[in-house]
Length: 317
Image (cartoon, rainbow, N blue to C red; front, side, top):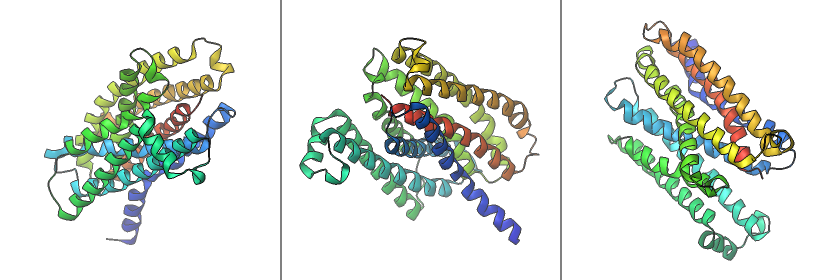
């Protein structure tokens, strides 16, 4: 392999990490718009956890859907699951500690073992947060075992526990207390996670034109449904939380809803354009794999900005 080819290969492997600074940008913009009504450290941790969760779910879906495909590299996917599940576990543990400290009215460094135990045993958010940490830790350990043994394991063993863990924390928030709020927010979070996670998983695992030609159209069709669910549930949730149109401008939560809505419009327009240009021609096998990876990461980065805003929205008010 030439030096240029090696450099390009390394760039492809690291390119998906561009979603992290993109999400950080979303958090920064959201914190400015919220004007002191949110917790920046919690927002940052929440954004990283949400990115890791979405990517883990996406990898599970790719493993499941691509089980009969010669283009999906299972070993590469499971190695990525090790990293994303471990990252998710660590950030959820940090959020759990911060939540326990907040409930005791102290900083995390002053949290006692007894206070932490009280939070885990007496607060719903504590119990669910601990469950998420346990699920992600077990998944990371399981993925390590799969990588080391090379076992042929179905992606359903990723999709099911991750799907459960993804919705655990959101359904305990403000929206989850409303009538039909829990199922609505669960649908919203799952659809958004699939929208971002599957495309990012494709960027992490596909390295051939044939792979993109096979998997991208399938993703595109599913993504259309995900976008529809995200938009509808997001509008209903925002209407139930805000209560008035004026709150969109005078309330920090409302301003973040506007920012998220603007990003959604941009993403829908960009998705329509990509479908006409990239997806429509991918079956001709004329688009090189590195080009598809770059296009996928660019789209994922924009979605990640919306994730950063959404993560801040979840810690606002």
